[in-house]
Image (cartoon, rainbow, N blue to C red; front, side):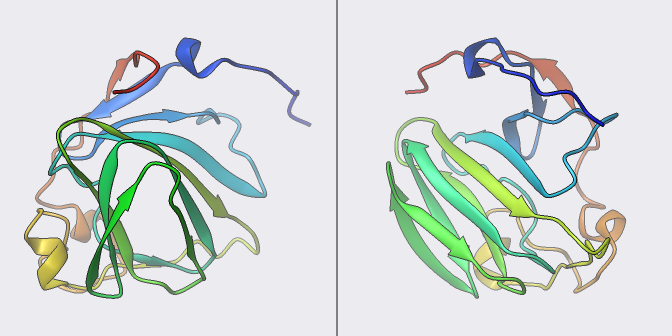
Length: 161
């Protein structure tokens, strides 16, 4: 059984991806949380958090600071600090930094049943931000084929802004 822990976000290790911003993954690769995933993702203006996708479980997103765009079911929606987004299972989505500075988003996704299937459809709005797969696929390696696979350990400065 994993042990409980407390960590301050300012002290938590972060990971930077050259295409998808920086995030604080509270769980560790060797001990993933079985019920849900949780992280804080920090995006610069124009930077997507992932490729446009839909997962087999619900996800929720809470904008902690700054501004971003949510591309949901092919429509772009502006978000600002304190906005909350609920995506039921199967909702196509991606987030892109907006405004004049960084945006911090708390991201939580359900896990369960061992089915973490993900669909990566093509989307014209997401493609404007290099956030759409070239062709619809269920394979992450195909969806992310045009992205670097380098993750660099880093530390974020808090508060963001």
